[in-house]
Image (cartoon, rainbow, N blue to C red):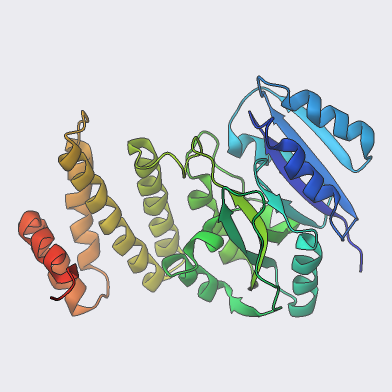
Length: 322
């Protein structure tokens, strides 16, 4: 089969990296592509670069719009995409030449609705990926959702590194104006999918920029966005009666709040944490409704009473023995 695949690439202030990104897509061994470049009001030469590629290759389509953020740009691409499948790529990243072919082949072979791959996190353009092994695992939708709380969290939660059946987006869009937009969205897509296939092959190169969201270090607004997304995810699992996944989300929320409050306290950050602290206290009642190990129950109950003592005990338990 040779179905049309829409490759959606939001573009904003990446003129140094844009050629590398687009060239990697044009070199794909799977050629039946619709490459949608969404110039999200970029103030540099990105718009002109996109237009040049549209003149060079008829598969490239360019949309120029006022700046609305990453979610808005992705949503614009989704609205006009004609492909049976959708893929997303950030415009400072690039992909292996067999990226689409391998993900598409996996979908056909396993009859899954989403295929995903591993990636390399790098700031070196000469990076070399491990030799492809062809190893993959097929998960049910609930098994894939459980991966959000394990070692595969990052490759599972991000929008890129995947090939989706376009119909999954019939009633799902990325939240406009939100940081960590993937955290608000991916669980909905995984839930809609009947099965998800994950390959260990490293087919995408994630460029670690110092000014990217992940490269900025600890940031209050980033953490607050994650907290909001996790609350919405927990509500989603509650509605779907996926109580084990709801409980895993509340556990993640506990540690996210804990890290945020301790960071603000340790750095004497000029922030009003009253509302955050109140939310953290209210979380205890939700934790008490869940099913957890005795060790975690004891830890969170005591932490709410004497956080300083529990942190000291935790730190001592992590020190190497003499």
